[in-house]
Image (cartoon, rainbow, N blue to C red; front, side):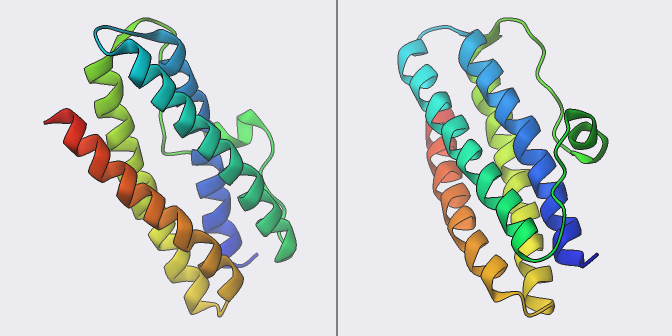
Length: 145
């Protein structure tokens, strides 16, 4: 198995756990600003869901097998699950920011490995993810000030 497939599978696992975490926060946030943050979290998890499909299909396109079970995702993911309980907007947004920072670091690692293996399709695919995380982090940092 190529290093690119290995990194993409870790990224895929993180996407799946993060998707569920952000959706959990979407359901459970409380506080002033609920309506706007509730909508933003939905936007985030919809974007993560699109990435999940794209990444899994890319793994198949380059001859790999994407992880596909929750058990597999939890075994390799570096994202922790959210508790099923009320959470303040400030805490949820701060945690999403932390997770997006980690995802940005990981997707840059995917790009580096893909470039080393001359996998230009994967490298091009993750360029958009890098830009999206950078923009989202700029906005999250502005919100948290």
